[in-house]
Length: 283
Image (cartoon, rainbow, N blue to C red; front, top):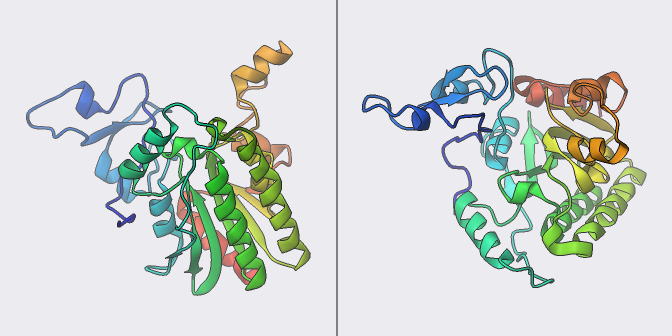
């Protein structure tokens, strides 16, 4: 199955769906236009694709699929997909879980919520994992955790820099405690990578939440984020209802986190590949 299909960025719907759906016209093919969820500007979809999924009007970064991300960051045809022999098991006999996984595999072309393997950035070999929010919101289940752990161990053994692009709603509820175990497992593997002098860079994309934020997402030697990315543990509504207090405006956005020292830098999508290349040079 070819996971590197024609680009089709994931657009977050605003109050109305794509203009092609909202205002059908015999002269305008469905899906020709998209609407930005931030500035509400109507955009020609092909222009957005050419601009790496970024709104020209307000710089909003639409979500990307894992294959699109890999294509935009790595050298052409350098990605080697690893750890593809895992099957997601319904260990808790969660109703409808098997059917959901199968449906998502067919829809996305992925076997699970992360792509993990090796590739090159400006000729330098790296180990890289990219989460995909289309697959149960990139939730952290057994297979996702195992892939990231194995990739980390591979990077440690072969003295490769490790780069992880996060995009997740958190731990996968359908797998219960098995999901939560992945937080400790990935963190332990990253500690060994660190002890061996390995470089670990995380790039936080929208959204990065829950158990992923509380584990490998925030363990990077260098932590980057895309503009406007929402990053946190619990959601804003959950926090507000729990502490019964008003929250600072945009307190979970990348810009707020940078101001408070939670991340190291915000990098526009068009500069991510170049920035990673510079960091690899330094290393």
